[in-house]
Length: 334
Ligand code: GLV
Ligand code: GLV
Image (tube, rainbow, N blue to C red; front, top):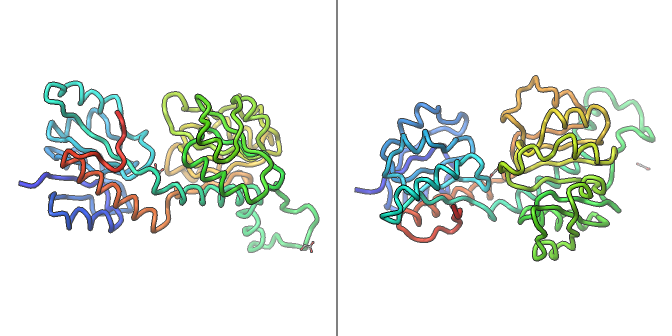
């Protein structure tokens, strides 16, 4: 009989169509996009499946792999980030089964979302630096008394230094879009220089301290790993200029949120734009929501119709290729 697949979310139609029309799998799915599948239901549904399509709200850990059992050989996440996957546990599955040279293979969806994430990052940056959310609020709630000389003034990109924390495909795409705004200089830091990527945008490699002290706009584009957890903390914020803007469209876990709150409320930095937080959703009672200089979006960086469908299609194609034992289009090296 056909391999069994469980899909943890009602993913966009393109991916579902590819799976249905392939005739190569039978699948069951959590038929909602409004609430994630309850953990208990997920653990039951994965029993005995050959493959799993998931999104970033599902923790793929030892408990889940145990519940799935030994048939599970392909995992396909509809995301570029993979901090919701316990790579250690997935690696173990390979070691245990090394004698037969199989293990769980993992697909993900980089590249197809780069344009959408870069575009949103620029939108968030400008919304923060030019105070758009505050401004529309003032306009419609009676705050617009008269045209004023310094009212709602912000900071401009022209002549600025933009710093990128973690230079990858997305960081390059952001810089390419910011360049026409007459940015003076791009700088970046990472675990090591990345000369091929840096040369595309003429970015200079600097230390973390230099990144903090020189950036007028600091944008975080790194993956969340044990090494990057909380790297944006008091130490970093204290070295930033009080006119600088902090942007994060990667993962909330790279930021120490209490330290960020402190930096924003004390005026240590000028503003922050966040598409990601810990936890998600961020409770509406969270102190960050009380700050006028903090723009918070509900994790929508890749949310364009075309990109979400492309991610869905890529996740489906990765899965089908993985089940056939062929190289996936985008496969994580474990
Ligand atoms: C979104 O955050 C993703 O990882 O695709
Ligand atoms: C702004 O609207 C100006 O005329 O300076």
